[in-house]
Structures are given as C-alpha cells and as structure tokens.
Image (cartoon, rainbow, N blue to C red; front, side, top):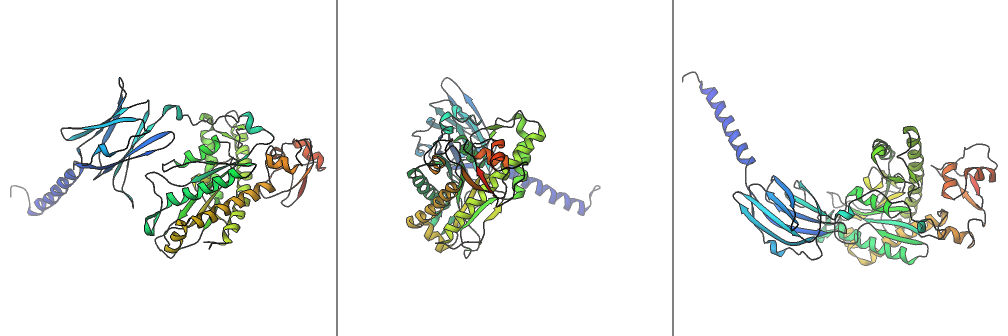
Length: 451
C-alpha cells in the first residue's frame, strides 16, 4: 500500500474525522433567539440569548451617536421591535445581515461607555452575550469625602440594605417559580420603610428595582452613602428540597485576611477611603501603617458585625426554623468591607416547598424585615455613633459637652477605636479611666468622658 499500513490509515482516518468534527464545531453558526434589557440607575444591560457560542466585537460611532455590535457567523431569530426602549439610552435598534455575520446597530440618545462579555450556560440560561451601556457621569467609583451634614451631631444612622441578585440573575428558583431576586427585594423594601419611619435611622437600598449590581458595586454604594452598617438579604437553595432553615452570616477570618491583602496590594493606586464616612485614606500611608490601620478597622468592623448578627439570629429564631443554632462565617464578597460592619441574612431555603410558600407570603416577609430591623435598632441603641441623633438623645438631648457614658468592651475593640467611635481623644479616655497604658480586656466597663 505504497508505504502506508492498514493501521496507519485507520489511525489517520480517525484523526481526520476528529479534526473535521472540531473544525465544524468551531465555525458552527449560531442564532440570536431573544434579547432582554434591564435598566439600572447607572447603566442599561442588553442580554442576547444565543443558540451557541459566538465571537463578537463592538465599537461606537458619532454624528449621530451609535453603538455597533458585530456577531460573527450568526443570524437573527427574534423581533428586535418587541424590545422596550423607554427610559433607556437607546433611541432605536436595527439589524442587518452582512454575509454570514449579523450586525446590530443601536441609535443612542445620550453618550455611553460600552462594555461587552460572553456568559456560558448555567441552570437558567444557555449561551449569552451581554452588552452594558454605562452613563459616563455615573462611572467614577472613587468615594466622596463625607459631607458636613454626615458629621452633624444629630445625623441619622445609615443602613445599606442589599437585595441580592437582580436583572438577568434571578438567584435561586424554587417551587412555583419563586425567584430569589423578587423575594429578597420585597423584604429589603419593607426593611427600608421600617428604618425610614424610625427617628434616627435611614435606609439606603443598593437596588430599588429588577436590575443587577456587581458584588463589589454593592459595597461601593454602601461606602458612597456613608453607611454605618451593610445588610445583605438572600434566600438559600440546595439540591435536596428537604433542606430548610434561615441563617445569618458574618465574614470569616480567612475572608478578612484575603481582603486585607487585596486592599494593601492596590492602595497606591486607589482612591478608596475607609472609616465609614471617609475619615481615613490609605494612599499616603506606608505599608506597615496601612496594614495596622486596616487590621484595626476590620477587627472593629467584624466585632460589630458579630454583635448585630447575633441580634438578628435571635429575632428570626423567634418565629422561624434556623439552619444552625449560631451565627455562621464565610468569605462572601459582600461582607468584605474593612470599614463597614456587614452581615448576610439567608431568609430560608427557597428550594424547600414549605419555606418557598412562606417566603412568597407578604406576612412572612414583614416578619423577616421586622426581625432584621429590631436587631439593627437594638445594636445601635447599645452602641450609637457619637455624632448620631441616637447618641444625642442618650445624652439627654445635650451636645458633646453633656453627660459621661459607660461602655463595655467587646472582642475586637482597641482603646483608640473606642475613643474615635465616641468622639473623644485617646488621652481624655485614658485619663477618665485612670489608665497608664492602652491595654483593655473584653467585658471591661469604661467611662466615656464628655468631650
């Protein structure tokens, strides 16, 4: 057989078939089956549902402003005219087939900064192409310094309320198509209303509608709003529908360590501030001092988080089954703010038919929001920020020069942090307690002098 054995031909034939199959797969045409749009305050998100993976590119044109999306070896299998464009940066959307490629053009009514990426299939969707249209004025993520109003002696205590998921990310889906993103937003809005109705407190929702915010974006919003506390609300899920119970989470030691490393690694090029109201910047600190400041801030933040989490856990346990009898720890990204105490509440297992039914109930949603609210209120009435209305009321309606107070030391406290939290100098605090050193112990009662 002119130098070729039957075995070599057989092997070549198999290899050739594999190469042919791979070649066909790599150039296989796809179709755009559906297009969805989600509107957020700072951007609009277009999601293209695809029959398979694609290659694409985007570019902008001016005079008039347009965004062009080219999708290789693709065709359109849906009606773009059905897409609602009201209140979006898009005035009109049109398409054209250019040979084997699909071109989609967005006629814009305002300047945007585009971003695009592919998403692989998951439990809910197949292949997707995402195009984000950011409003340029919303892009800066550096945190503003606190305004004078935030330092007022009777300011509200600000709670950042984070409803998980949203937009194209529904979260867990339970029986009856109960979607996590809907349940947690309903609870978050009820909690926001309770806080706004309580003198001395103010709620700030990270999202007020059905749109997606990145995990880091959620904590950035909390910092931008000068939040004193961050509460993220979710609903759990598991492959076994028998799993049930609510849970409350705080940041784990390992998660805290990794976040410290992240902040220290990027501090030289970062405009991020820490201290809740932007009181401390890491940019001008050397590595050792920045590390000490971060450690002190995160230690105090985690201590406050644990105290709040215990309150919320106890309140929920009064009417609901708990997954564990104690507060749990994990490295969730939304819990990693070094300067803002943060907790995550899993309101129940949406994958459990009985708990999904409860989570859909407005009465149960009210109970859950009230349990979180009472936990927040109790925590800040026992440890109010020095410049807040609650602290002013506890001083008998007097200014900082009013009454002395008592404070019990908790785990994670340092003398300097206690002084800073209560608006007094370290030397005054040491003098009031006749301390010649900075050492304190958990459970110790300190006198907080009038400043």
